[in-house]
Amino acid sequence: MDGRDLLEADALRSFAVFAEHRNFTTAARELHISQPSLHVKIRKLATALGVELYERDGRRLTLTAAGDRLAAYALDSRRRAEEFLRELDHESAPTLTIARCGG
Image: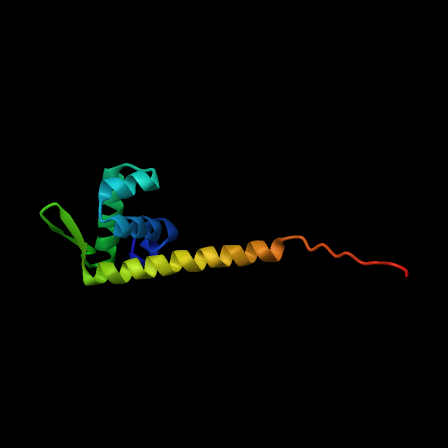
């Protein structure tokens, strides 16, 4: 599995939530997965990309420069997906036309 495979929606969503909270337990709870499972996803993503995505300073987690860039990409991807789905939903909404006949 390479970096392109891991830049799928699930991996990006998981990283975006982790980046938002900077806490594996809180992010895993929000994602409805176990903390070890989330940790493995983030580690596989970092390994596939060949970069560290966060650093640990005692109990505090901070994103690396690459982690910041990936978080911005993930958030932008999520925003664009939501925008696309709203537009798609709007296009598929039935159109009601009311016409008045006669005088």
